[in-house]
Amino acid sequence: MFSVGTFRSRFVEFSRVNGLFGKRDTVIVGVSGGVDSMVLLDLLAGEGSLRLVVAHMNYGLRGAESDGDEELTAAQAGKYGAELRVERVDAASESARAGRGIQEVARDLRYGFFQRVKEEAGGDLIATGHQADDNAETILLHLCRGTGIRGMGGIPARREEIIRPLLFARREEIEAYAREAGVPFRTDSSNGKDVYTRNALRLRILPLLRDLVTPAVVENINRAGDRFREVAQFLAEQSTRAVGECLTEIRPEEFRLSLHPFAALPLLLREQVLLSAMARCTGVETESVRVQSILALSEGETGSRVMIGSGWEVARNRDELVFRKEKPETSLCVSVEPGEEYRIGPIRFASRFVDAPDPAARENRAIEYVDADKIVPQALTLRTWREGDAFVPLGMSGTKKLSDFFVDEKVPLHEKGEIPVLASGNGEIIWVCGRRIDDRFKITPATRRVLCLEFSFNRTEAAWQK
Image 1 (cartoon, rainbow, N blue to C red):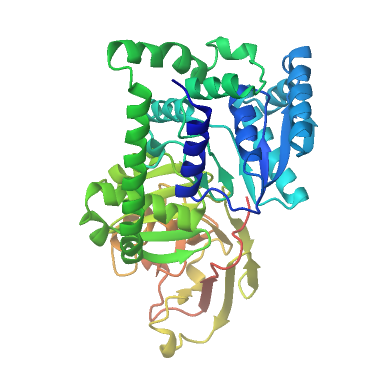
Image 2 (tube, rainbow, N blue to C red; image 1 turned 180 degrees about the horizontal axis):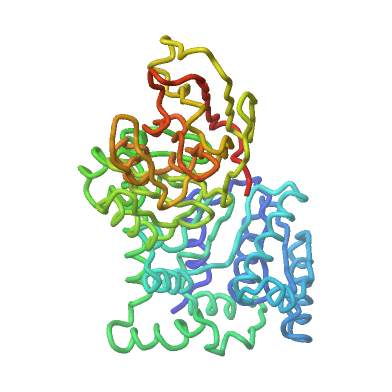
């Protein structure tokens, strides 16, 4: 036998245990006119000391039916003495304009509206009518889409200022409460159609699981979600120390993760370390499939890389993973005159004629000396290095591909794009800037004119643009 009093007691206890609201809080209640949100409004109104602001969004998707939802919501808000905020939108047009699914667009519009109402009304919390069946559907969706452990936790009772006080209750219980307590509600006709993924889960998959496996399938999925949330919390706490040990360098658009301590961690903790490191350094909520790609990359070859979304990529570079914000495609190709100085974005390049090399600059790779008369024709180009470039490194007799030279020099993958080359008019590479001159242009006893070359790269400045 269903008891309204018992249901209300469970609501109060669930809210207390999860710390959902205080006695004097201002709560923005998202109310659609459906049974879940109407019962939520009734229960919150029964708390007495809360200031309630009802927020209703009319999506304009069902014509008179949508208007009826708005009218019922307004009437109930007035009955409880709650403030009412209504926003009308054309969700179908917004969906078409954005090129995204209407359910996804509607959700973004709804939560954006709730946030605005909270700010305007000086609210403390936003309450939504999610319940246990919604949570089971969410967990199943996340499982099928390949979520990580945190996603398997489902819908939290509270996340920051958003609370879900009905997660303790099944849909059938909420409907029973509405009938017994005389709470009016309206049924969205689209809920009976399985054209949306969530509707198909609710109408076809969960009933099938109840028949084939157990009538308690929703309760069991929710209990599993509780355990997954506990595991996710435990791993998050354990990963705090591990992240500190693995991260070796953090800059606004780049950070590195050392593979030696990382590889020694258990697999689950490695996954959590990646999630935590990326959330901390990029602000990106990374999907589980991306994490698996990065884990595979950590065991791959130097030079391999994957994209992880939101403009970030990660590359394997010997004993570390380098996470970098993608930059616009860049290139450099500038004619330079001997005896002049150039500043191009982060690059400074200068050359001048001198009588002889300065012995004090011998160990300074930012300064080199070449035989000016060997540059034929006497024209210089400072440009981005290209795949296939080759030169004769100082001290060698044969040519070497520049890409192989970088490997031998242990140049980090992410720094290769910062190294231009100085080429002669006929395309011969004179200097891999800041690294090595070509042996064919070195100073010899027969040299009559010496050209001093200087190069520097300032990583704090913007890269040159294509």
